Amino acid sequence: MSLVARHLEEAGLPTVVMGSARDIVEECGVARFVFTDFPLGNPTGKPDDVAMQTSITGMALDLLERAWEPRTTVQTPFVWNSENNDEWRQHFMKVDDSNRGALAAAGDQRRAAQADAKAEGRGRG
Amino acid sequence: MKADRRTHRSHVSYIDKSRNYYGAQGYPQAYQWAYNQDVPFAPLNKPLSECRVGLVTTSFFERKVDKDAVAGSAKKEPYAAKCDDAMEGLYNKDLFWDKDTTHTEDLDSYLPINRLREFAEQGRIGSLADRFYGVPTDYSHRRTSRRDAPQILEYAKEDELDVVLLVPL
Image (cartoon, rainbow over all chains, first blue to last red; front, side, top):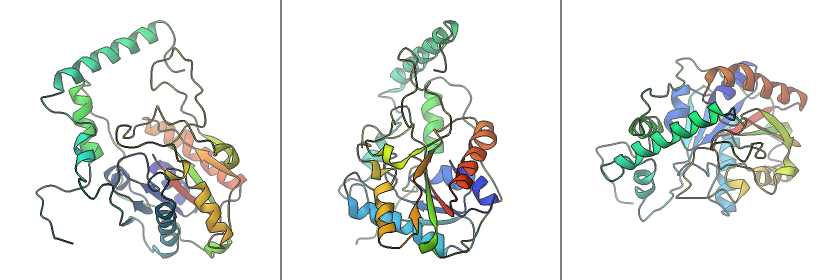
């Protein structure tokens, strides 16, 4: 998605990326970025929280007017879980001794399924 | 609020997490993420209250995929569709997001069509385009840069967009 934003900027169209994967967007490099430190899935606000969605979308509009150079990142003030905000971070794509064997087995299974699909000519649907 | 101290940055590095996660699944080669030193910048040349705004998502419009196909094999092609036709939600199951922690039942939590229409009613923006645009995440930089990005630019020209908000899930 950041590559698309760069292409539009090169053609003279101002853009804002709104997202939660800060490192991926900033490594690619975009003109304007509104970062919300949430689990991936709700980059424009929590489900059914209209006030938050309005605020985050409004910050993207503000950034269009106010950024004067590329790589301008604004972080929105919202916190996913003020009681325990590290829980979702640690849980997502967790790799530790408790699941290492299961992950290796899942990888083998997935590769076998993909090989079967390829052999049967299914593959990309 | 009480000050805190940490030995690691607080926000998640998805580049680090995904490398470790797929490595643990036995994929030998780490994904090569896009990295650029230079970043293009187009300034806003007219008042936002006169701008037509376009929205781009990584969601699929619908699941154009054979039911027997393996997960993740939905067709990843750019598209344009009517905002009115997105009101029931978009197809996200094949995308990479935190399905254990949250959900995407509310469209405006990942594609703020209703919120932007409200901003248009208030005069904060000129209008939201009638169509929105989709670029389902493709792991090929070549396809994203050479096929998808020019297609989105084409849609932007057809719909006379002045600014574009891009929202990856």
